[in-house]
Image (cartoon, rainbow, N blue to C red; front, side, top):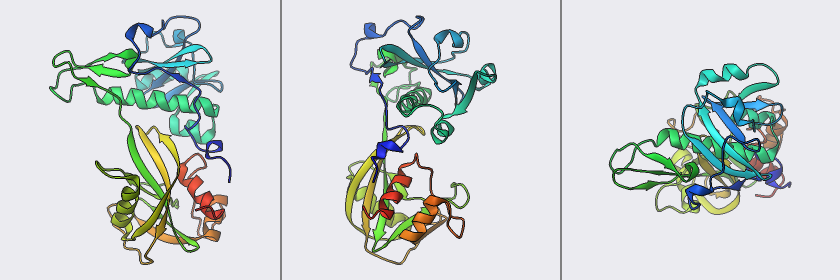
Length: 300
């Protein structure tokens, strides 16, 4: 089995990160020849050739919100900023274009190490867009620490970016595995079951609860496999393999449109795009694809 980092999206990142622990004066100047910018217009990221790191001068007059200092890459300071969706029109002609982050990952439009950087930028900008007011007193907050913290000028509360942990699991029973499809999935695609961790819950218990809630399948042993940042808007996917104890599936229609046990031959055909029913696997950049490949290889 290959290293999951060879195929998974958003896991490689050579950014030397800034953080909320670093002082405000450590934020470098934005308007320098060395600085680079990730500009997101609505939900589309500006690309110049095979990179999303553009010169700040290209965004003059477009920035409409918080500017974040992400850190350094190859010694250059890297920032992220949001612009209105209509600003994408400025970059519609070659050598620039715009793409949403999911398409950038699926098409390998930038190198893998830069893709991880874009995940940081998108998650951070999404967090700022959703957390403009203090959860403690309702006052408008201000960005500090280069954008890695928001502070309330009224009650002095500090607010920090959050990551939502999600378990995603390949449930195996004998030589079959459990896959399902949600109502929002693209046609014919089946994937691993997944769900958010709840407060006070271990990874193993979250796997067992989610599988039982969605299919009424009880789960025994749970093994952690790998993880993947998922910036839609800001999750961490915790990939697991699990032992299914039951055969009969009872799906919750509010969660799943369908769920089935698939053989290794079935899953191999799905991964190869050759399943006789036209059933498809998630793309290689997704952690579900990695878990399915591990099942076919007998590693779960």
